[in-house]
Image (tube, rainbow, N blue to C red; front, side):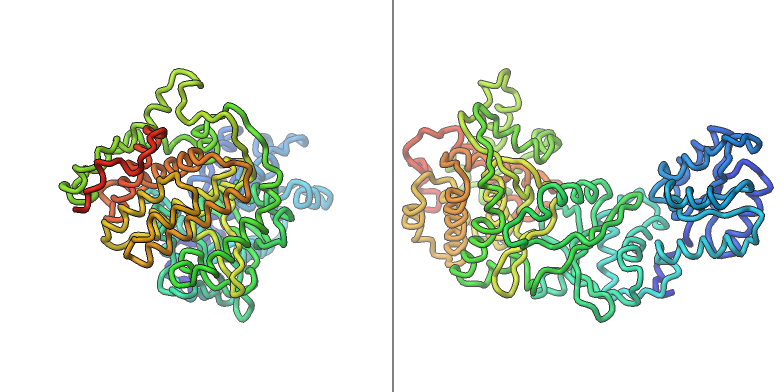
Length: 550
């Protein structure tokens, strides 16, 4: 076995109301190299304990007696009711009263993995268990992983600290199920230009996306995430993505697996994917970046925008909560905002009479009526959006076409949402990894401008940092695409979306783990908050901010 880190053998749950039979099964299962887990009790208590232990021990296989309540009741098939309730555990039904008809029905209709007649040789049972284990588990598979550090990282990201190491074999089992015939799997980060990095720099990643080569075959894309997220994504893919994007610039969902805590999705590899958009924009000329963005927004996703729905008297705050949920709001309102001196020098920041970056959000949350909601707009549009369009979910192929992955949040949302999320990711994550306060300050002022887009670049063309100026050009282009793609022309709606995204991001990472670049997210949030609170002011930036860098 190549998987030396799998210290616990596969776990087999025994559910039977006959003590002598249980003892025999225990001895055999242990002899065969598996770990027996015994459900205890009688009648319904036995069934309840079986459900509990299947989940508690993350059992891969269960051996369940067909008659759990009364061995002499011909109508008792209570064991069959356990099959679906203990999924993803694979069940073998055992019975002393089996017939060919019952065996076939149990496997085909009740979805059991097998049927064992108790009068038969135990070797037959061993063969059935072995077959399931080899198909569903990595433990006995001669499966070699190249770059097993990806597996370690996946465990750290996806499996909570309170989950025993023994049950972290779920990561390996997902690969075993998605690649049943593989001998070797080579794991790579999607961004081929940086092979040493294997996870997104998005704060608190909740998923792992890899390029995987099976033996000598072409690669596929594997996404690992918590079980619930995987099931949501599969549903969203089928409802909003499959056969609904122009040109089908989207991977094909080939297979998925959902275990106790985590799951995995297997997607076809898409063309000659070179890298993520986050890396692409760091070195490519602006005309190729525009080509890639044009391809996604004006071609691939265009049909969704054409089917946008008009909404009146709508709270944008509620629209974004519909996509993100509301936990981010509670998280933000309880967050300890950094002191100004942490964000930049205290002397500089004291010159900016900014509002607290959360005052606007608090006002919305505390509003007594819909009319008091500061995010209320008379007219807007919703459309099917990707819902999480950060620059690591947008992939670029060798022809500079854009492809997308990760559809967990796909669904109806504010029509500006994807544009705003991509822009927010560029500003807050990609633009300023270095300590460049003057450039970032001017960048934030430009982002909050209400000038026509054609004039915005002229006003800020004096920014000396060429990389910053390039990013500003990209952002201006994203906004131009938002106007072409949607029926919304209200700049305040765009700034609102940007503000919500910035607050959402700024509160993802605990304060004690903040880096300098993440602290400065609060400066952008503060400037956007001031902009929204003083929307009708014609002068921007305020006169008193003019000497901040002097």
